Length: 240
Image (cartoon, rainbow, N blue to C red; front, side):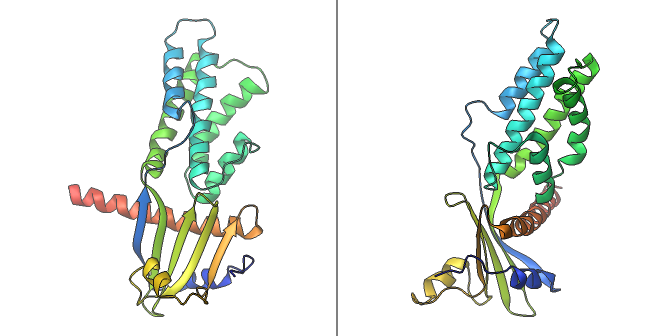
């Protein structure tokens, strides 16, 4: 039986070693189950700006906020972090912890949103349009992570002959990390050859709301985003 409370020290020590290279990774298109998409809310906001109604700027800001928050929740679901009890600012903090560049982009939006929702100050036409533009920028900049979400990746240390395998499971809302011998072609190869009576070495599985989940999620998010950036950079070089 897997020890669910295994500390993360072996994983963190592995990641701190020099000579680590990124290996195989698996992606899939994450599809949300919301009845209204972030893009639809954004379209509503854009239409509000041109509606000619006296409250068009308020409507535009409100729908821009819905567009951003819906996109946030899509990302949180992809990382198995969705909860209806999380507030808008808390969602922003979580995305920042994972490594997504949400804070810088959304700080200005939050100021305008807070003035409307807590001080009941209507946005100016310029603020309403800026809010819609920020929502558009946020959705565009984060869409790639959902369209091609990295749910599994490997990192290898040639000096130790070991590799670490990260995996996120949406069905069980867990994140796992395994350190295995680099001689195995893949994690599936390792698991198929593992005796039925044994459990993998240095296997860590974290599930919400375990205390270790946040630490493992940060490691997963940090290295997943590094892989995404390298892959995107390689694609750009290939097209040049």
